Image 1 (spheres, one colour):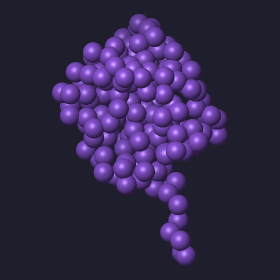
Image 2 (spheres, rainbow, N blue to C red):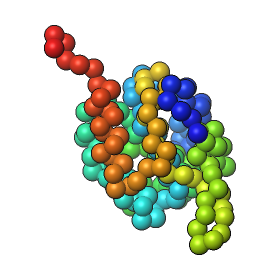
Image 3 (cartoon, rainbow, N blue to C red):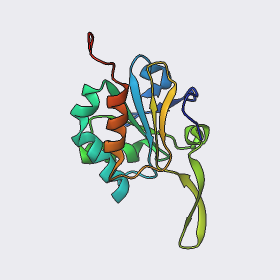
Length: 160
């Protein structure tokens, strides 16, 4: 898994409308890149709707949020529209970006093993360097943790 102080792996993936989005487009501002296992499942919906509902806080911190899953474009498009999301979702169908970030892992459920995305979040500075990692993000506490980090990244007021 990518660690703090490492550059984020470069990528270009289609967004919910099929348009390519690259890491370079996130440069110049803080970015929150989060990986989620599957669109329109309970945990992923909780996480995405919470980000949507706290969007003003993310914007106030100057952060752009991008969610990445191994779903195809049509699935993330439906999820984006159904939940009224106001941030970008990206389709990583071949899970190459998840692998590059180190979040494509063996998962165990009910005694069976399968490969899938480990719900994880990476906060990147304006230059694309990872400044914080949440290796096993919880949908219920995700925003509190991310927003606390973003507040710590904000520059101190001048003259203070």
